[in-house]
Amino acid sequence: MTADINPSKTADAPIHDLLSKRYSPYLFEAKAVESEKLATCLDAARWAASSFNEQPWRFIVATRDDSAAFATLLDCLVEANQSWAKNAGVLILTVAKLTFTRNNTPNRVAEHDIGMASANLVVQATALGLHAHQMAGIDMSKCRHTYGIPEGYDPVTAIALGYAADPAGRDDDMAKRDQGARQRKPFDEWVFAGKWEQSAGI
Image (cartoon, rainbow, N blue to C red):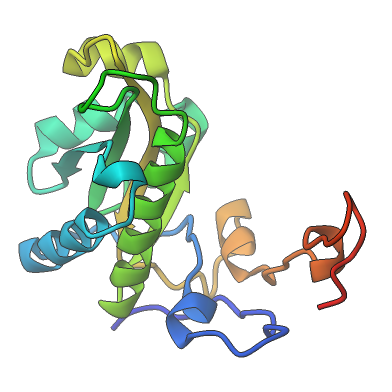
């Protein structure tokens, strides 16, 4: 059974259930993700929008079915992330192609487009009863060396994908984080109109 235990703050406007149910767990069940579900999540990422349809994302995937590959990617995370991501079913390293293929000019929105692809993956994962936790905490030089990532490409983030574990009965820091209420800034703090920091009044 999939854990669905993180309480969502009531949205200020009606949003899709998949968005309100999405959260980034620290506690994962140490079990594999079915290959069909993984393929579906990756295909959702593939259909993300991108500037000039460049699709600048590259994903390096390691599943816990392949313990050696999983350990290799896990070792590319910072130590604090390794402590909980080790239980995920899949680890993904995202990499950005920094130039446009059509003219070799810099693509200043490559990382934005990786975010688009990752968001697609996360929402699709939620629809399948999975959860994803995205991380900035990676060792970029180790990633580059380990996987032979060439110049013109940069490691960006890592994603832990899997089945959330139920934190009930646990009182460690990770369980407390997973049980904590989700909070978001109100519109007045980030939706402006007319000039900087002037609320749009939405």
